[in-house]
Image 1 (spheres, rainbow, N blue to C red):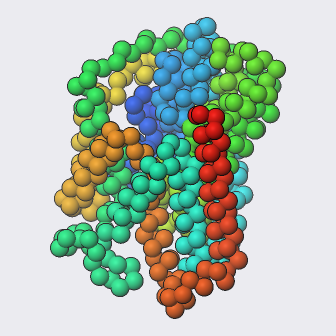
Image 2: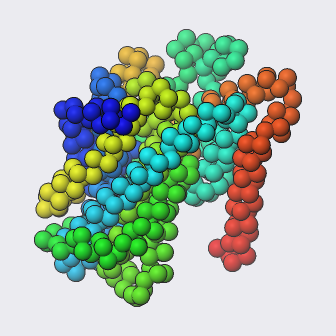
Image 3: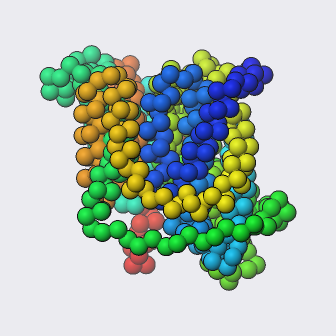
Length: 494
């Protein structure tokens, strides 16, 4: 299967998709205010006419490129291009101010590639065995697994747990619109025939992450634009493989943290970046240099946030549970290509999946080549203000929503999702839990009802399964751990 997957990569369109994805991702990530979630949501309609492997590689190339691209503006401008690059600012920008911008960018690039390769290795090792294990799951086990995933998102997704819980419930409520999965009767359609198919994922994605950002930009412009600092010039740089070798333990530990946290649903790449940064500082013999331009302060968060990419794909592909907001969007792209993530993916589409795995590793080559080539031009890229691109984003959002089913109903869904997303952003609610609730809500309901039907309406079917009891036990332990952490912070007055 690996050999067939390798031969599948000898396609000119795979190469074109990889190069285009990485370049677009680096540019998008380098512009503060944009991000991989928005870019991938807008590019999904572009992949409709493509075969599965090039289509997915295009989106994954954007994902990888954008995570690294966020470090460019973080280092040169002191403003993270993506939230996951916030930790890189702490030492990256001081290095640039000291005339070491080229060194900081090289270290960020090589650390990003290392983290990506490490997580891809873990992905290849874990995804297929995990999917094979999940083949033995029945409805009760799948319901417990979905409940565990949603609980992790609420408990450890960052921010207010109440806000995350509300957003998950809103997403689940939006997911039940359409036909009842058991009885086939319409629910909450208000007499609309188009709504019987439910709220299509792609229009909702585009509305939540693209159109809501446009509305946010329009609202913020009325309040005036904040002054933007001039980017620092890029020197030749001396960061190379020797410097990476000296930091090998930091890179390895940071990649481990990023991969492990990426596997946990809904946490994202910002948390492991800061955890890795703090760990690198605590282990360093030069603790006083951190925050003033320490090279390990750049390598640690960049290795961690790029390792999340492969880790987040493990539950996405093996179980159909997205690891973060970006992989939730990519999950929608898989489904549009006829590759339904979950336990049967490796059995039914093994060649395509392993071709994507191999391509993930090969994506490091264009990432290094174009990353190094774009250092000099990075100053000009980050001068582009996101507000100049929002009219184009609004137009692409309209066309993208319509192209899913050639339906104006989907355009209306996208605009409504954009309005809802904008309102929730202004109120301070997080959007990723809503998206993941929308994706996991329908299979959770279906598995739960199927399990109850199989058990004759009795809940004993959940208590008779060791897997269900283990998942519920882990969920309870996570809840107790979160409660203990909350009480501890309350005692400290945090």
